Length: 458
Ligand code: 4AD
Ligand code: MG
Image (cartoon, rainbow, N blue to C red):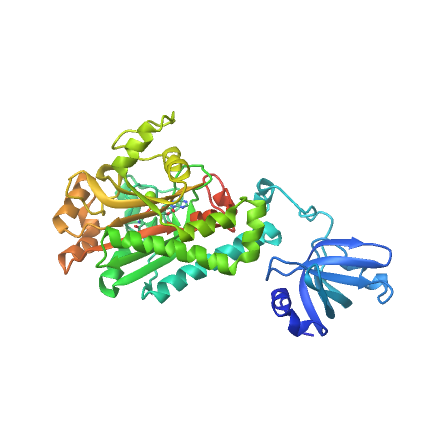
């Protein structure tokens, strides 16, 4: 008999109750008593387990003994019956062990620490916690595509191997086929004999290529992996993370801020609607009050403050920060968290940062000191979006690049965008793992990725 997904049985139980069905899955837990035995079976299609009931009066113990093993993979057949506790359960008539599971299976207990689970990433998806994380990750990814596709954006695929450094922070992984020993005398000689005949990196952002696509397609978004060799060993940084980068022509900084707010609210509303079981679980396991928080984010306006005002707020806070607050210095996580968690207690856009601490491509404000850039900060995490209007004036852009000692010849095509029919345009980058953390209450970015890559850990 062909098996049915467990989610289908729960979602359409009226259709299946009273009929004979087959299910496949892994044994999460089991109990045995004198006359009856139970197995909690999970197949990954929904958070809920299906309870399998073995009646010893009707089935010989020998026929299901091997199934009463945590971690074993089974196929079971029987009648689906209504149950008050669960919605439905199965009176098993036949069970087959697809894969047995020896005693050294590490997931014997109901709850394991997240630290322990990080040591067995290949088995984490078999726990309720990670089943919920990856269900939400999948749904958020779908909601992101849904938002952009419904709003006239084209999905573009920007290269992963690149010759440029978008953020100019120099935190790039090198892509090379060079042997670990070479006779090269200079760096130039070394890269000349490499695969591309020049230095190549893994991209830190698809923005520059995204701008090229947008200044033709009008509105685009990228959604793919990006790589940063940052040595920040924090709970919010990964060396390989997924970024969503829309780029919108004929939009200024105010327009893109509006889009970013609408977009974040769209994602959260979608998850509230479509991941009810997962959010209820995280509300209990990861962050008390999570669902209320998400509902209030959707129904209220995000705050907005200029960088200059934010510096004043921080100075007047009476707080002893580890890093001093001075106009011109980048906001540290402790500053960001004060602003969003204590001062506003909600998401906040900090706008008009000093040009000197931001990337070359941002539009220079008339004050000559700041740029039309904003970071969206949220409680519990800090920055989740980096956003800006792009400098559309070729001369101003060149000067910003020269001031940063960037080789103009490497950015010729990028500069061409300003030469041929330049337009005001804006965009942002959302870190997928950061929005997952915000929506689930998961505290460590390592617990949002299937196989997290962080400094010193592959
Ligand atoms: O602020 P960032 O560096 O902006 C850019 O890369 C721009 N090119 C985006 C654009 O305008 N198209 O990064 C954007 C977001 C951050 O706000 C953060 O959410 C995430 O990417 N991010 C990281 N997430 C996980 N681990 C890291 N190491 C991250 N670095 C950035
Ligand atoms: Mg940033």
